[in-house]
Length: 476
Ligand code: GLN
Image (cartoon, rainbow, N blue to C red; front, side):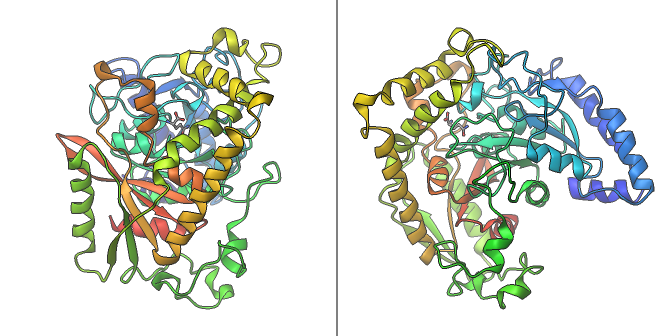
């Protein structure tokens, strides 16, 4: 049963929250450490069944929320009170969260049940799940291949039916990449649309928390619960602001494009999700990828879906797309280095330098080096300038197109025995990183298979255009 149907069934008394949660816990028990050893879940919430019983009581009194009785697994980089936000690192292995991140507070308010904490690449650094200090996560859709990363355990948990929904974080593709490899749906929201309070971030100017789900509708369900301004995160903003106020900035919705031909702003508040999807403009960025079969899967999916519609589909040349990887890493290195300075072994966990793994150390040391005074203006600032150029280029693209479509990853997930060099791994994020640099929203949806391995298709839309993006994604 899809999560939305489940909530309905739970509210109508055809299923109980307790039964749902027990079933999910049983799946975790059966396949996470034993049997197929998916190793997607690092810790299970021992109170989950009690919490489910409380939700069942609320249902009887007719007061249950939008996520009533759904089981949710959370990336170990997000604080959930009483559970371990270890970031899959020895550094924070014993760190028990003293508080709930804002997104968790919101989930609990809507009666979602946190089932446990997901494995991931250490400190969200990686694209395969292989950087976890607590072992690899297997890909439930292709057991000999990596599940993608860094939110490896979140995507694998959804694919393995360990939960109804999951949360990950995405700095440069960490949700879309594993979602694509595990054959599920994962999104990266507009920068600033979800509070980062309580997230142990990789790079503060890029990170966003977001859902992983089996279908687009339930991805939207969880996103709608967690989105919105939060006084604890100064960059977080309210959607309503962008929907109801015709801003003069680039965030303005332009009525020139078909799906934006809507009624005056005030009326729009409740009708936002009804788009005219019959006549839209889709851009296909010109890219070179090593595995041509992937582009063929994407084009086939697009052709099939567009068949009965008046979609205008055109190639688009994004000149600075090639700069994305080189722009991203200096930003990540420097911001990560800065973030690790609180991990001095006194307040939280162990001293970073003594307990972190290879990739996390590489980033911290690299960040320390390039933020030295003698390099002032050479790396970080230059990268920020390049980021602005890329952002502008996307803003321009969205003057002509409603959405851009491209693969989520340039190749199939590699086999555990065939791990590429770290430079190759960095380059592997070339198709997801641009959305983070441009601060736009993006989603990966299943597009097909190659040799039974899932292939994900990305949709990019402009800032705060999530509702349209979900509507379009559900067409696929
Ligand atoms: N794979 C990318 C990296 O290693 C993305 C990570 C992320 O989005 N957290 O930085």
